[in-house]
Structures are given as C-alpha cells and as structure tokens.
Image (cartoon, rainbow, N blue to C red; front, top):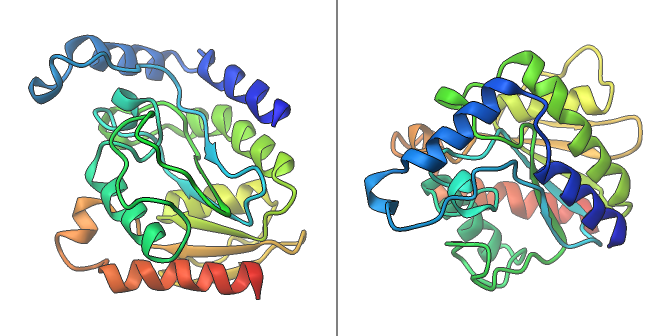
Length: 221
C-alpha cells in the first residue's frame, strides 16, 4: 500500500512530456461548456484499485474531459460507463458507474491503469510519450504481486503490455486474443469501449462481459 501510494505521488507530479503537459493544462483551463463550473484535475492520472488484484485493466490514456477532468482513469466519460458497468456485472466493482474520485467506487480483485497517464491531443500519444510513461505501469505490475491477467483495452494497450513483458514477436491483437507471457501472466485482448466501437456495434455489452468473465476464469481458475 505504501509503495503504491508513493508511486501515485510520482505519477501525479510527472512533467516528462512537454506536449502532454501543455495539452492537459490547457484543457483544464479552457474546459468544456458542460463542465464549466467544475475544477479540472489537469494532471497525470495514477492507477487505482485493489492492491491484491488478480486482474489488471490497461487502457490507452485519460480522456481530455473524462479522467483529465475527474482525476481518475475511465471516470466521467462514455468509455468508462461501459467499462465499469461490465466490471460490475462480472463482480469486479461494487457499483456500475463512476462519476468522480469520491463517488464510492471500489474495485474488487482488479486494478485499472493506462499506458499513458496524461490526456493526449486527439487521443494519440507519440511513441516517445508512451515510452516515457510505460515505466509507471511497469512499476504497478511489479508491486501487484497477485496479478494473473492483464486485460488490454485496444491495440495500443495490447502493444504496450507486450512491451512491458518483453514479448517478441508481438502477438496478433484481436478481441478475445490471449497470450501467455514468460512470467505466467496472461494478456487478454479486448476492443476498446470507445464510442467508435460501441456505437457501431463492433463491441457489444455481451462481448465486453465475456472478456471479464474470461479474465475471472483465468485469474481464479
């Protein structure tokens, strides 16, 4: 717990990537009209969850008006609505929604992080920004000693997880793809719960529920 708390402080204070620092802080100043009365977080987002987690959920990066506003990854945006609802249905959270950092959400057996901890312009981090940030996820993975499964939300997260585990050649990403890393942890691929995927039906609630049911079976089976 102490080591995770110390890592969280380091993440929040990070200013390694000038482009991301400029963007996240500008978004926090200018705000979206719907959130004009809110104080934006405007800093890097640490991971959060159960220190005894067996399942680690790896996303791409915070949304400009989601995590960058609320201070918690996947909180306050449509992707998070899908993610936490699915995790609730499969027994990983105590509630189905996440609106802000103090809304009572508790993860049970799971931990949620991101490959990049600052909101990037156009939701597209540069390779150098990814490389600057991945050590934070690597440290979380080292500290979470009970982990068995890494759910990778999208191809970017799948690639990041493969890098973190030194997997070569890179396994092919797909929804439901599985790859056993050398340390015995399983990479489990899922389409990202972005509006681009959920509005078009590329990702359905049943598909996302299936991923977390499979993660539970792998982690506790």
